[in-house]
Length: 209
Ligand code: ITT
Image (cartoon, rainbow, N blue to C red; front, side):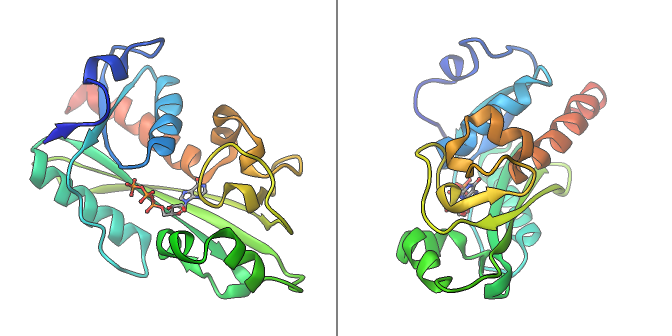
């Protein structure tokens, strides 16, 4: 097991709480920053763990997240959480969904915009599943969703992945890539799933972890 960039102490200091720690297994630093901001609101520190966690192919994000959480726990022996997310476009029958990473890395944002050229129905949603597991307990999932639409062109430089082409319904017309991390967390799929997790973990922790 190796810790992510920097050492653990550095990652959980610098203005963030030093209290109870939640270990986040992820390779995605944007996700880590989003999680760190949300969990800090619950006085939780987030530590990024770089541990092998196999991502299976499945139509269901919960299955993917649960499997990854179990695999990560087997590889490091700690209570950890993982997060799996995807973009589901209605006019594409939910594509790319669980295949969002592959599609992003192959055809990219331009590919999605091209597929949707001349398509009036632009509704879509992001779904996030946070799965927490321990060496003793089966994974437990927390789900968050955000509805919105696919913009006509890329807008904004913040965030990652599909953020530049996703305009959340509850927002003010900006894409997620035009928002700060804090603004994105207020309405994003991940922000919602993480708040459910943080609420549970900060309470459950008093009893079990
Ligand atoms: P992990 O190591 O945590 O698995 P990942 O980058 O592999 O990080 P996912 O498999 O959960 O993340 O996400 C699949 C893809 O979906 C990801 O590569 C992005 O292109 C996209 N995605 C996920 N969450 C997103 C978000 O909040 N905004 C924009 N795109 C997102």
